[in-house]
Every structure is written in C-alpha cells, then in structure tokens.
Amino acid sequence: MSPTFEDYGLTVADDQSIMSVNLHPTILLAFCHGLYTCIFFVALYYIIESTQPIRKRITLASIITFLWFADTVILGLHWKVADRFFIAHGTSMETEFNYSLTGDIAMTLPSDIFRLLSVFMADLILIWRCWVLYGGNLKVVAVPALFVITETLSGCMVIISWVDDGSFSNASRTNWSLVYYLMTVATNSLCTILILFRIVRVSGLGASLKTYRGIIEILVESAAMYAIIYIALLIAYAYQFYTGAAVLTAYNYPVVISYSITGIAPTLIIARVMAGQSRPDDSWTRPSLPHMRSSVLSNTESLRFASAPNHSTQTTSTSTGDATANIDLEAQAQEVVEETREQDGDEDRGEAGALASGHKLSAGKV
Image 1 (tube, rainbow, N blue to C red):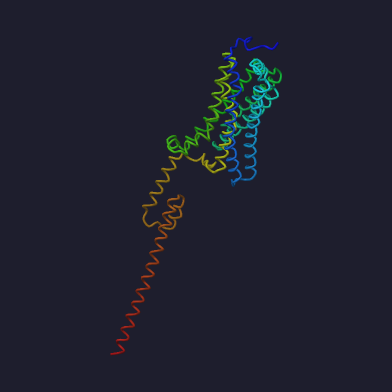
Image 2 (cartoon, helix red, strand yellow):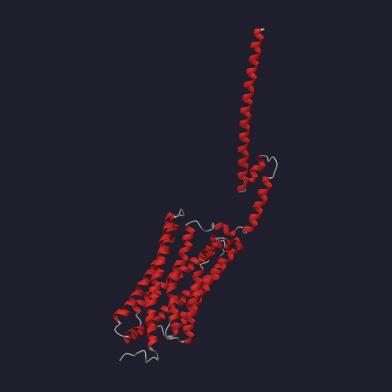
C-alpha cells in the first residue's frame, strides 16, 4: 500500500500546499518566460541591425538564443510535470502526494542540466563584462573565474547525486545543492560589485543617480537583479535545509523566477551593447568624468576669451569640440566681413567712376 500524507505527519493543509507549489510556480514561470521572450527578440533585432563585426554578432546571437531555448525547455518540462501531477495522478490527494514524493527523473534531470548550462553561460557573460570594464585586466576576473569553476563542479555533483539517488531528499544532494547556490551567489555578487564600483568610479555616484540613463546603466550593466534573485533563492533554500521544512513553498517561487532572470540579465547587457547605449570600451579606462569636465571647461574658456588667435593656436585648439565650433563661427564671420568689404569697395569704385565721368562731361561743355 502506498504511503499517505498522514504517514509523514502532514495535514490536509500541507497536502494542499504541495498542490499549490506544483501549480502556481508553473504559472509564474510561464509569465516570466513571456516577458523574457519579448526581451529576447528585441535583443536579437539589435544584434541583426548592429554594425559590429559579423563574427561577434553571430557569437552573441548564439549565446542569447541558447539561454532563451534553455528557459523554454525548462518551462515545457515544468508544465509537463504539472500536467502529470494534476491530470495523470490527480485522482486523489494520495496519488498526487505519492507522485510528489518520487518525482519524475525524466523531467527533472533535463531541467537541472539546462539550468546548470544557463547559469554557467550567464556567469561567463558577467565575467566578460567585468574584463571589458577593467580594460582587460585578468587579475580582476581571476577570483570570479575560480568561483565559476567551483560552481560548475558542484553543479555536476548535483546532477550525479540526482542520477544515483533519484530523490531531492538525499543529504548528499542537498549538500551539493547548497554549495552550488553559494558559489553562484558568490560569482554574480562579486561581478555585480566590481561593475558597480567601476561605473561609480568613471561617472561618479551623483551623476549616475541623477539621470534616468545613469540608473538604467547601474541596473543593467551590473546585472543587479540576477544577484538579488539568487541571494533570495539561497536564503530560501538554506531555510529549508536547516529547518527541514516538508513543503518548499518559499523556495519554489524564487527558483522559477531565477530560470528566466538567468537569461534576461545577460540578454539585456548584450542588447544594450549592440544598441550602442553602453559606453565605448575604451572609455572605461579614461580619467573620471569630473576631471575631464573641468579640463574641457578650462580649455574652452581660455579659447573663447583669447584675442586674435593665430593659425597655430587654432590648430591646437581643435582638440575640443567647443573650440572647433568657435573657430568655425569666427571663420564664417570673417568671410562675411570680407565679402561685405569687397561689395562696399565695388560700390565705392562705381561711384568714383561715375563722378569722374561727370567731371569730364562738364569740362567738355565748357
């Protein structure tokens, strides 16, 4: 005879919670995937319309396509599990509960594999962005790269333990899952902090928060939502692990959101780069913006109030945009003055010729 939920010390309310976590997170995942699909096609459009080298565009398009495809597969597998839970095994609470205990390795294993690959790809995108922002400094990305290696190994151990044991309740799998979440949080949190520090260092905290563009730059470039959702996921999973909660209500909601966020965060970064909304790669290694502003303003003011600049001064002053504009305006004004002078000279010469002719005629008559 199959065990019932009373044999595990659970109540009817607990069984209803099990039904809830098999239905509501699947609906939430479908909603997140719909939002992700919109972002994916917009990013794909920017990649196609970009003027970047074709090899780079193909690489980035392949990455975001794989991330979207993985999230689509995960949604399909979750929907199939919900269908089996409520339809194939939905004749009674006992049959639903027994199915929830054993699960379905044919559905859960591919979902875990695609999730592992998606997180690995997303973390590589974050590390690549850190590498770009710090001018190709490998020392900066060495620690995040080490975290990614540890994260991937622990994720592989999660898959192996699931194949060997066939259950989420085994202690070895739970331990490896906790290590996996810890390494994932360590990787994306460190990358987010490094990117935030670089943005503030280059543009200044006040300048970044005063404009809508600066806020978007902080949120998108740093992949802050990616780090936040995995921190929430780690807290929920650790709570379940240390308290031994039978029903993982708090855990299932952040985990389904993390599926889509894992693809959305790097897709937004790539879309912003391809759309030309991000800073040029070489601008991250230039001096901070306040110093550049003061230098440009001082040079511009000295050029504006200089008296009668010669040709060499004008050639030197073209290093700033404002100075070039001022020189062009002065040249145009000088041309207008010269044309006016030439016209006045022609008119004066015409009048002088007319007067001379008049005198000659008068003299002839006399």
